Image 1 (cartoon, one colour):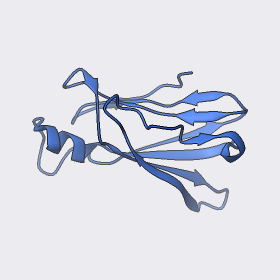
Image 2: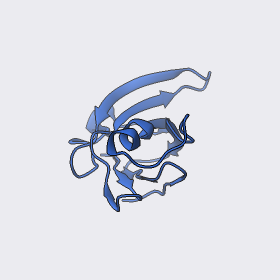
Image 3: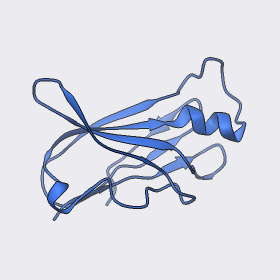
Image 4: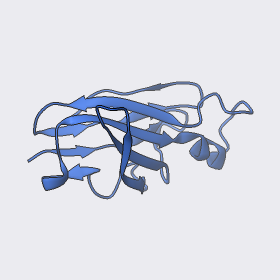
Length: 117
């Protein structure tokens, strides 16, 4: 069975980003987006449960939307007004069962991701 997890790392503070709003969408071939779940990260920067797991997991194209601007405003990190990065969408595809881990490493000025396991 497959599963999808995520976490958010604040590279300004050098640690996990707590209380970040995270939304997961499935992207349909006709371009529609279907919201599957909306969560917040915990003190470790992770969601308390996988974004997808078990029977809910299916190969396809997805988008995780990270609301990092709110996090950096709450922590008092130096930011532009308006924020250079406020909401970060990551589109990716899952082709098979397995553990897909899609983290976000971010600052108010940059972000990166990778497929972890």
